[in-house]
Image 1: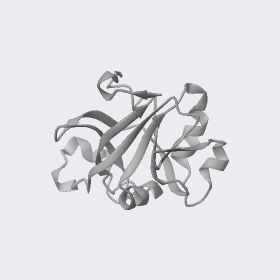
Image 2 (image 1 turned 135 degrees about the horizontal axis):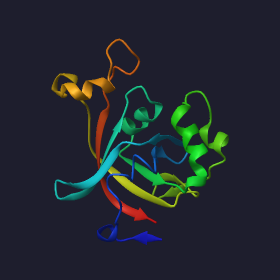
Image 3 (image 1 turned 135 degrees about the vertical axis):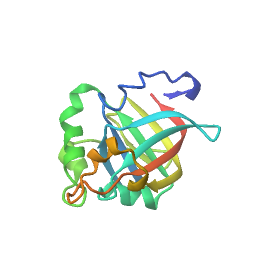
Image 4 (image 1 turned 180 degrees about the vertical axis):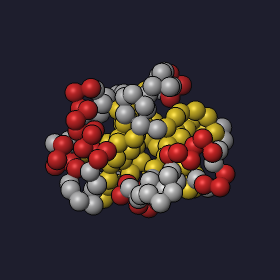
Length: 165
């Protein structure tokens, strides 16, 4: 059932880190999902938004760049193993939907999963890679030079269009 965005109430400092979520970008028939544990919700440019980050090396980043909408969805604890698969395997290598037995669900031309307990439907407003030279020194530990983790995240700011909870 749809929820009024103004009524959405969460624990802001644990929602992403502890509960994890799936970021799904694309459209039915052409999408990819990945587990995310970093993000936030708030207000930007007078709109309710989600602040999300995606590594450029992730397959889902290609879909975030290509399409203007995406979803973020949360799941009950029983799906933690499936979320681990979505977070550790690449859609370039395996069919994650088949590997997890999740059921894709079309929501306004975006993709979520029937197993989701809540889904935010998002419209991309801004996407830009973080500039390493502008990051505080304490944050550079997340991007060790000379490793595969060296590339900084894309910052995605997306308007929350609706909440299905």
